[in-house]
Length: 165
Image (cartoon, rainbow, N blue to C red; front, top):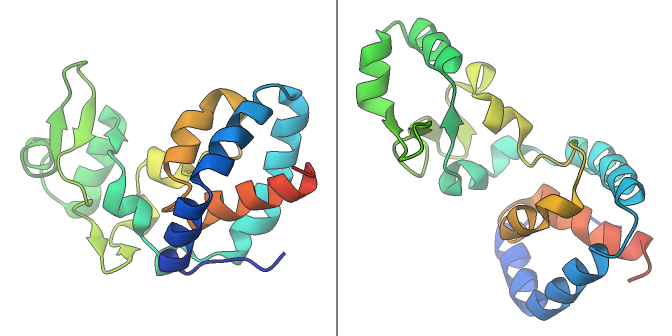
């Protein structure tokens, strides 16, 4: 399968396949979860290295990032400013008490790259979370990013082929 990384083309295809993808999600919910996890993880391992996320940055333009206290301290050390300054400039507290980045797109996005890439947050490092188990249980959140993430888009499209959907 030829990977598609052009964001305009991905968005166009996503719009064209909206109904198909709704049906595909229903189809997946009736599949063996462990088998789907295995397929997704294999696809993720083969597709992700072929896509340079620093040429995209779409996740940084659209995700609300949760940050841990430890990450706040690490960012403070990296930027050489106090934790209080970090919280004042970059973070807000959600109604549930979680710390989240206070802007979308992310403060640290420069063009399509992360300016703190080596020190980026866990949630950023783990996106798009295809290496994790229970893919079927995360379909709603994963498919929200199908049209903006070339990795998710290509993994899902290849999964359709592999499952002969």
